Image 1 (tube, rainbow, N blue to C red):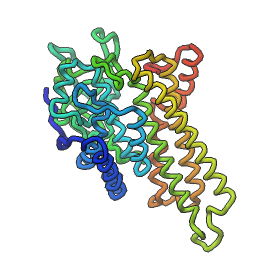
Image 2: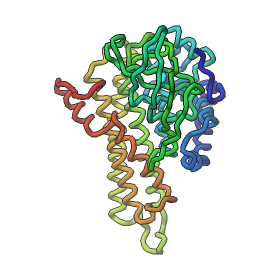
Image 3: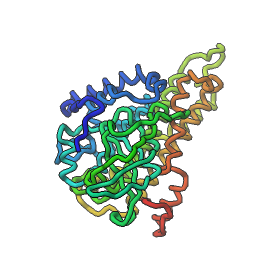
Image 4: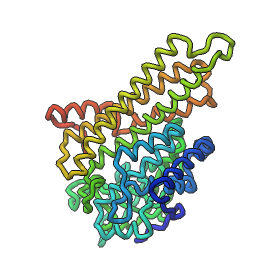
Length: 390
């Protein structure tokens, strides 16, 4: 099975200053085009190409296949900066981390996927998991899968299959060519509109067994990036989008608060006690959540680099830091909205982008409030009560 590209096959700029310039250029373009992306409700392939030039889509490709894996903190700092301009684009960019899942595929399959280069944009519509017919050499897949964020610019798509005896009941992800499925454009939402998280439909599509894997399954390639816990990483890259949104919102209210007078000619907003206190508290909350988030990330990454054991408690701390970041980031954006006053209720207000998008990550199943309880259970040596946690 070959995977022709939906986007033009673009290689990353050489590591170093050229790649840094490519990333800064992508940020400049995003400032100009974020309204366009929001209105059309997807991030287009030509912008995905800019992110490829900046190295985001080889950041989790194993070095064995030409990738240049980034430390999770380094990758998430980039996603955070993108999200400070446009959280929905940051959400799409975050899936540059998802190629770690492919390490559970047979090595020969991985080599085939990366044959034309390591810069692959992946999008998965995994739920609801569908029953597939097991046939000789693979599966016949039919159904409708939701929430395929970034599917309009992806080189390869994933669909979720219910597990059976061959997988010990573990669900599978099947990789498919975008040309072989239908993208059902049903993403009609108030927040994260530009993620283009449409549904995927297939009808009796044959997927070879070697193109399927257990999400988060044991990697066939041993590198630091494949040792880092995959499912916690999936939660983290979504949570960091909220941290970026919070940064963008606070930067806005700080800039507005520094103005010398208000629109009515009265005292500048920033010279009001409530504004000063609210801004300071929100800044402290955001920086505290970031510090916890990146501290735990770097601690576990050091273990992955050394090849040392990574325990369930380590994984639980990653999940806890991610959930905490998503919820604190959302609270910070709401605080910025409160400081902005009545004008922020208009659709055209700059804070609406951050408000609408920042409410979404904490709604995700991997970041909802019940994951606090699950993390606490693991720390106490109890059963988490949530499948696939931590």
